[in-house]
Image (cartoon, rainbow, N blue to C red; front, side):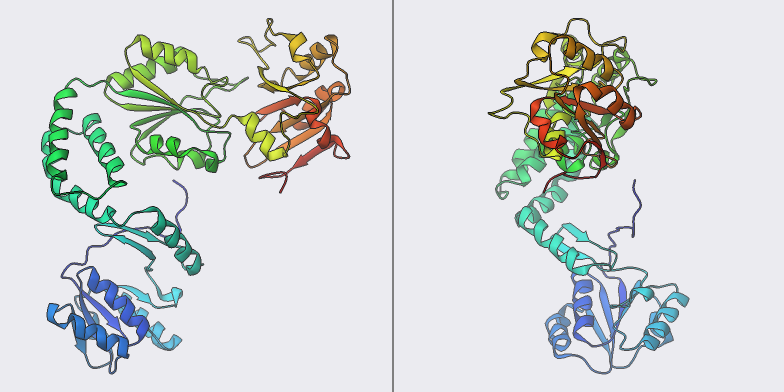
Length: 475
């Protein structure tokens, strides 16, 4: 969990007394918000803004407001859950804050954060689904902009679905035990909630579905989803990958998966590092396969989270074969492989009508850490092909030698990219003959990609050497 500027909580105030000091328009807005949450609002003010007067007139029948026609005093805090003040001066803010804290009451002084124990965020109201956005008082306008974005994404009908969920929850819990079946029901419910509005028969249909799910899942085996985490930047994840992370029971993640990506996962999901890094102690593939099988047979939804794309040098084929042998459902969600992220970050197209009509992705090492013995070096040395070597940092010198032996021009442009789409991104640009020395400059402590081909010539025009940046290299 990353650091939090404030703790987001949702506080039930139904029939609880709260104090609002001041009769201004700003105080009226806070009072209306508290009353909407069911609070009994005690207003202390000698006079009220017209907007406040209208508010009290509208709500007087419900008994949500009590107007004390006098200023607040020390005894006003007795029994209050929270206290809010629109203080015209710093002196009154100081006095109100001290009095509230002395009485053990959480305090908010409007527009004076130094005297606030809590703050009000921008609200998206689909009650009982409520979303609040806070910027810790630093940029309220930004919070409002975020709220507007969320408002466009969440249909108003979600309020009815949230109420329906509240209505049927107990009945669903009676039908489905905690675990995979219950999660499957609610995942299906959520998919429906972002569609049409519920009807009068929706609850009955949902409970019938829960009954059927309970019967079919009495001995339910879980499932495995292989998910591409992309090269590191969480914003490069697909929406489908995010949904899978938020529906997982267990996440087995690679060493190269960034913390920002893991932050998008369901909080309750168990996370297990199964990292595999060249030159470092790593989990055995057989152990990873066995762990997925064991967890899935226990009824868990397992997300196997892989850096880049699962189907590009991710050993997905071995994992899929083992899971299918065990009769376990497996699906794949692709991710952006690091070669494509590198091309975007460098602003270089890997194909070009005048330079390269094909692209190759080639592994830079075999099981023993050396270059694979059966690579088609003649094809790789084709000057009309762009080649990207994965995991080729420690074999960069051998790569250059093999390509030169097969007739590639030693002056062919090359690029080495380190930590693609991550903080600390670096690149070295030069020629094939200098690839080994370039690798020495870049270093071996982080993952690298080696790109070979004439499409990289644009990078060598006056830019040979190491450059460092984070984010796209071009505008």
